[in-house]
Every structure is written in C-alpha cells, then in structure tokens.
Amino acid sequence: MKDKLIIFFKKYPLFLYLLPVFFVLHGFTENYDFVPPKDALVLVIVYMGFALAFLLLSWLFYKNWLKAAIIATFIMAFHFFFGSVQDMLRRLSPASFLSRYVFLIPLFLCMLLVLVIGLKKRKGNIVRLAFYLNILLTLFIVIDIVWLASKTIHKKASGLSKEFVSCGNCPRPDVYLVIADEYVGNSELKEVFHFDDSAFLNQLKKRGFYTIPNSSSNYNFTPYSVASTLNMDYLDMSARQPLLGHTYETIRDNRFLSFLQYHNYRFYNYSYFDFKGQPSYTRETFLPNKTRLITGQTFLSRVRKELRFLLVTKFKSKTEMRKDAYFSRDNNEKLYELTLAAIEQRTDQPKFVLAHLMMPHYPYYYDRNGKEFPFESLTEGNQTNREHYTEYLQYANGRLLALIDHMLASSPHPPLIILMGDHGFRHFNEKVDPKYYFCNLVSVHLPGNDYTAFTDSLTNVNLLRTVLNTSFGQRLPYLKDTTIIMDNP
Image (tube, rainbow, N blue to C red; front, side):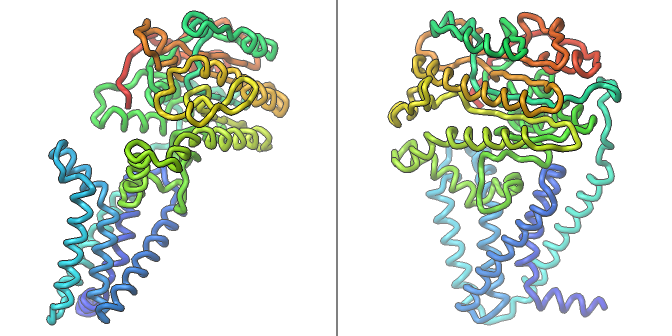
C-alpha cells in the first residue's frame, strides 16, 4: 500500500490541483465565518479551470504532462502569492524599487523563461520534484484542515455578551440604520455653510423623529466612526494588528449586530463594509462577491486596483476618470434599490437593515432639483465647493425622506429608524474649529416615542447604547463623549 502511494505521488502532477485547494482553503480558514463554503468551492473550481488551461497550453510545447504541470503551477503560484510577496518587500524596504511592478513583472517573466528553457533542455526524469511538490502541498492542506477543525471546535457558542441582558419579552421592531455619509449637523450648516436645514428636520419631526441638537461623531473618518458606532465603544489603539485592520474586524463582528442576531434578527448589509457571511455589494467581479477576502492579494486583483488608480491620477484617462467619478453614484442607486427591496420583503423574523449611502458626501452629483452637475465638478479638487455640497444635501434630503416614508408605510409594526451622518465636513480651505470635523446629523424614530435618554450632545459611541437601553431593556453604561482626530486611513 505504501509503495503504491509513493508511486502515485511520483507519477501524477497532483500539485497543480493541490495548489488552488491549498490557497483557497488557507484563505477560507484565515477568514473563517466570513466566507461561505459554497463560494469558496466555486473559487476552487474557477482556479482549477485556469490551472487546467495553463496545463494544456504548456503540454502543447512540452508533450510532457509533468513538465507542463510545473509551468502551470509556477504561473498559478505567481498569481496567488504576488500580493504577499509585494507587501513583504514593501515592509523590508519601503522606498526600494524591488516592490514595484516594473521590477516584479520582468523578474517573473525572466524566471518563467529560464524555467521553460531549463525544462525543455532537461532530459532526465523529474519525478522527484513532482513527488516533493505533491507531498509538500498535501502536508500544507492537512495542516490547514487541522487548523480549520480547531476553529470549528472552539467556535464560540452564540450567546449574549456579559454586558447585555436577555430581552425575551421585548418588542422586536424592524430596525433600519441609514448612514448618510458626511451629513453634517444643522449647527455646522448654519455657522459654516450659511444654510439652514430646518425644513428637512421639520419633515423628520412630522414623521415622529427626534433630532439630537448637538450630536457629534467620535472620529473624523468613516471606517473608525462606523466601527465605534456599531461596536458602541472606542477603538482599541493597542490592538496587535494594524489599526485599520482592527477597525474592519470590529465592524465585521460588532456588538450591536451580535445583540440583534441573538434576538433572531435577520441582517441585510447594504453598506461599504464586510460582515460575517455578508460582504459589501459595492464591488463585483466574475468571482463570487463573498470571496474577496481570499482573492484580494492575488496578482490580478492588485493590478486591477492599482492600474485603475494610475489611469485616473497619472494618465488622466477620461474613461477611468468617469468610472471613478460616478462610482459612488452608481453604488448609491444600487444600495438604495436593495434597501427598498429589503423594506418590502416579508419575513417571519424581524429585520435589521444597514444602508450606507455616499450622500451628501463628495462627489456632489446633483443640485436640489436633481439636475446633474457637470463632470468637471466631480473630479479631484472640488470637494471644497460648499455651494454644491448644500445643493446635493437638499437632493439627498428628498431621497432620504422617500426611503423613510417607504419604511413607515411598509412596516407591519412601527419601525425603529436611525438616520445619521458618520462624521462632519472635512474639506476646508481655511483653518476652522476642529469640532466641525465631527458635527453630524443624528435623528431617531423609536416605536415608543421615548426620547428622554437622548441627550443634546450625544456622540455616536453612545447612540446605539441609548437605543438598546430605551427600546430593548438594556442597562448599558454610557461612555465619556470624546472626539479623536485620526489620519486619513
């Protein structure tokens, strides 16, 4: 039996197919609970298809399956591990050309050429190399299977965090959290923009909303603000991983969502962030949308992202500049329509719908009447146009009211709705009071209309604490309200 197994491992180029299995399995295990197994399986099949294509092309040159498999494996390995190698080189020598495409791609082509010629000239058998690669990748896969099994066994049982109390008899209204990106508070609009948003706020009031007069975010950039809002806590600045990575992890597995899911809420993610099993809908490829956590470091993913950046910033490609300029507009429409569909959907479970719209955030696409601003006003450098900001804000008001009216009309029971900006306005030409970076809109609609716990200067980190205490019978303590200026992530 042992001899047959050795012969099998020497004879067949299993390594070509084991490599995609290892790559996807490793990524799946690293991102356990965030990538659905069926989507990971689709990804394996796609990669195996490419591996087979490279194998057949190489066989036409060699007429030898082992040699063809080695070439195909080398190409697939370059694709899989390009991002990791590039990041390692950037860490070792940040200013060096070694991590640049002008070095890495020619280096790969030279190595591929040497390998192609070397295998062509080689007359001897290469079964030892095949045996080594088969054993090595099998070992890696076994290690990952053990790691995955360990994660599965030690997976935390779903339950309430100790800070929460069970609320079995509480009402379960549908919960809608709408983030209108960079929607500033009315005090800032009056003082800085010389614009009064009272007409919109009065419309919210007529619909049963309470607007916090002097609300504020705790951070001045979206990822940090959203993380602290949903997790109802400040970011852990001592986290072992980089702060931005820690921030995304916090968003993906936050306390507010955990509380609602424990109470049988069905979650709809229509935001720009990934959550457990629910990635963002805002970026798509031919691969399953939920596998980006695995594919993000591959060669094609890196090139697609960075080449597009160069086309916009350096080469001023009109086509790419238009794609870039209208990216948020198209996503807004997509997320808006998905939110409308979720509102109308009838389920046996209560719903938690998170909608994140990039409005009135720059680019400012429309005036108050829905007339498009010219393309030239959407390019980089026009963020400071305050007149266009207030025009787009008024356009956004109409879209937001229509969305809210749909929530109120379609809900079988009075819903819980939170409309908020994630931070204040940041694009100033002149020096301003830093408080304006944080001054945001927060308006809430509670089924019981009890707003006594909502203080006049509530910050985002305490917003959902107040909601849970008021509507879900919690006794969460309130944190000290603080604002923290962060660098652009």
